[in-house]
Image 1 (cartoon, helix red, strand yellow):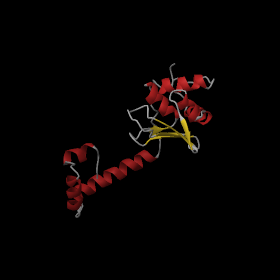
Image 2 (tube, one colour):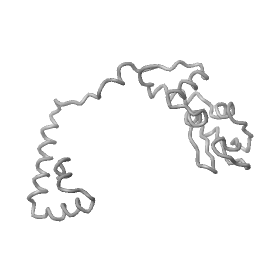
Image 3 (cartoon, helix red, strand yellow):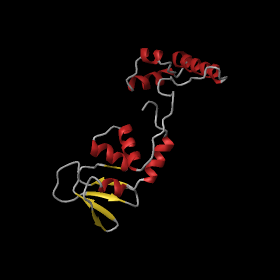
Image 4 (cartoon, one colour):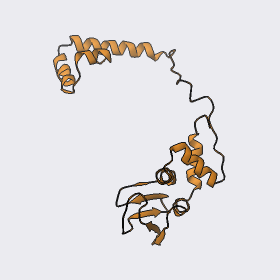
Amino acid sequence: MAGLIPQSFIDDLINRLDIVDVVSSRVQLKKTGKNYSACCPFHKEKTPSFTVSPDKQFYYCFGCGAGGNALGFVMDHDNLDFPQAVEELARAAGMEVPREQGRRDQKPRQPTDSPLYPLLDAASEFYRQALRSHPSRKAAVDYLKGRGLSGEIARDFGLG
C-alpha cells in the first residue's frame, strides 16, 4: 500500500470505466434521452436533478452542484479518500494498482549546480537595490504598501 499511484494508471482506469455502470451500481438511474437521471444521492429531493452523461463520462446535480467523474462519484458516495476509491474502482475493473516506490519519503531534488542560480541571485540583488535607491522607488514602495506588504516582508522575501 506504500507509494504513490502513478498518474498514468489513474488516467487509464478512468478511461476504462463507464460512469453509468459505476453510478448505477449505487443509485437507480432512469434513461432520459441520451443521459440518465435520478434523485441526487447527495441531498434530499423529490424531483430528479441528478444527471449522468455517458458521452462526457460525467455526473452533475443541478440541485446541489455536485459533479465529477466516476472516481469523484465513488469518493463522495462511498465516503472514501482518493487511494481507497482508486483501489475500489481498480478491483471492480479487475486491475491491480501499481505503486511508485521510494517517492513518498524523499524530498524533491533541488538542483544547486545550475549556472542560472548566480544569474538569478544577481538579478534579485539588482532589483532589491533599485527598490531602495532608484529615483522612482516611491511609486513601487507605495504599490507594495497598498498590497499590504511592509518593508520587513519585502526584505524577508527579497522583493525588489
